[in-house]
Image (spheres, rainbow, N blue to C red):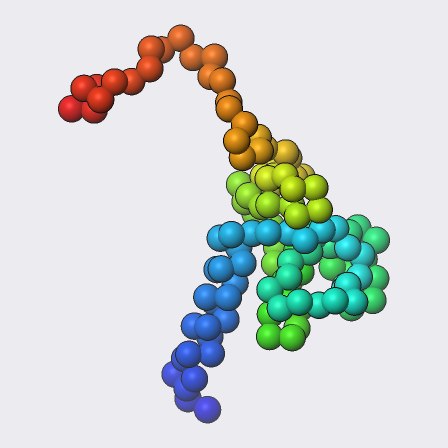
Length: 120
C-alpha cells in the first residue's frame, strides 16, 4: 500500500486525540477497564492496574473506536476530574488541584491594576 493511502484515517485519529487532550476530562481513577465503556471516556490508570490495563499504570486510557488508547501525561496538562468535580494540573508526576471555576484568586502584587490607557 502506498504511504499516502487513506490519509483521512490518520488525520481523523489525530483529531480524536487532540479533542481528548485539549479538553481533557477524566471520568475517574480505575485499575481495569470499566464495564460501561463509553466512546470518548478517559480514565486515569491506577498503579494496581489489571486485566487489559495490566502494566499500564501512569498514563490515561482513552476509549476511541471501541479500543483503549494509552496517552502519556506531560507536565502542564490540565484536566477536569468528574469524580470530584475539580480541575487539576499535572506537574512533576502528580495531579495538583487548581482553583475551581468561580473561585476568585487574589494576587499579592503591589502593582496597581491596569487601566485601558495603559495598553496604548
